[in-house]
Amino acid sequence: MLNNATLQGNLVRDVELKHIGDKGTALATYTIACSNGKGDYENTVFMDCKSWGKNAEFVKNYFEKGSQMLATGTLEQENWEKDGQKRSKIVLSVMKADFCGGKAKPKSEPVASIPVPTADIPF
Image 1: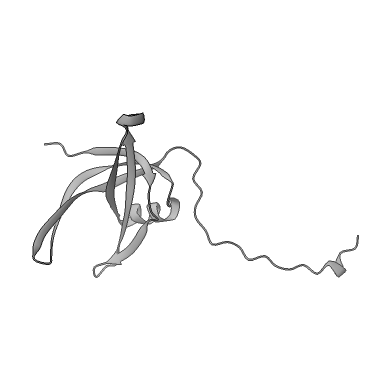
Image 2: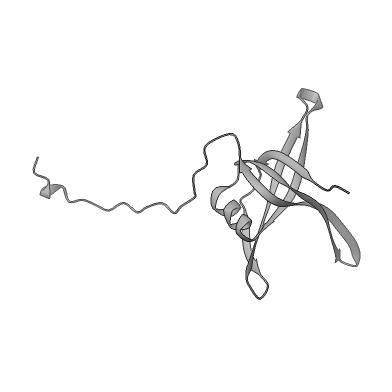
């Protein structure tokens, strides 16, 4: 059987990155909003996604809330229990994340400005 999904949409929140397990494997979690249809017939789906390892670090470094992404992966069902009730949800385990809709720039911390004394400038 084939389990493959490709979604294109915008991230609705910033990517969360954590390291799990003894080896500290990177896990990124995020949500993509995908819309189809137009006008009164428009429908938006919010898909929870996760990425592992170097792919997780790539997503964290290059995508943020509002970024457009083309995500390809497999659908997985996560199960857990809360307050004695069994719960589940479908998530996209992203194997490949691509840019779409604009030029991506790596996120970086703003560079602090250094004051330059104006008395030392010869003109």
